[in-house]
Length: 308
Ligand code: BMA
Image (cartoon, rainbow, N blue to C red):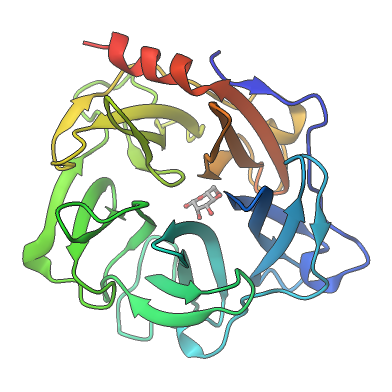
């Protein structure tokens, strides 16, 4: 496999002394800023409500956590939790894409998760105080959204997931997202029952800008419901164009804490920052703990380019 697991794994585990994160910590976002790794992670206590915690690290392996969550449910729209953060720095501000999960189908839309969900965006100047901007869309099963790290042709761009397909959305101000500015990007390989991503696909962390195109790490599963990662390469100036999409997966559950856990057979990543030409893939294992696997950026790019 291309990605090498770090020997210190898992690098973050639940804290039994902290009620809001005593049960599970998983699906982190990590950005590298001013010489430090900044992590936002999904955490659950015994109430099973998701909150977003923050931790900081000098080496990307040892973490110092804040005592309290930086984002928590605030009204009926997210009463069941705030989930799966993906932080992107754009023009000196930090934007967090996260899923607001409400138990009551507030706008009358049941989803496959049994409540209603909103693909939300929040903004921060300091990574700790967050202000909600609003959702990309309402009234549909939509999550796994993440912003590109720069505007493309003057517009902000987001990946999002209208199950089971990955879409792009363009916006002038990150608040207004029009239907006519959305485009279907790719979907599960529905024609190949043996494919690892036959049933569902979604995005992982912030797209990586390379000379060859936008390198995306994504996830998917088959009828077996085993989560795996793959890569997709998009055109730099026209990201609606998929240049490459290798058929093989690059990562799958192997360790006990990935195969077992709160939900079995899950590796789920919201972060792939690049530091000194190395891609750091942070991921939730079994929806229970956080792991790290790394890979030289060039190897990932060569793998993407080697595909037909
Ligand atoms: C997805 C998301 C993730 C989770 C994964 C596996 O739908 O909700 O947060 O890690 O399922 O349970």
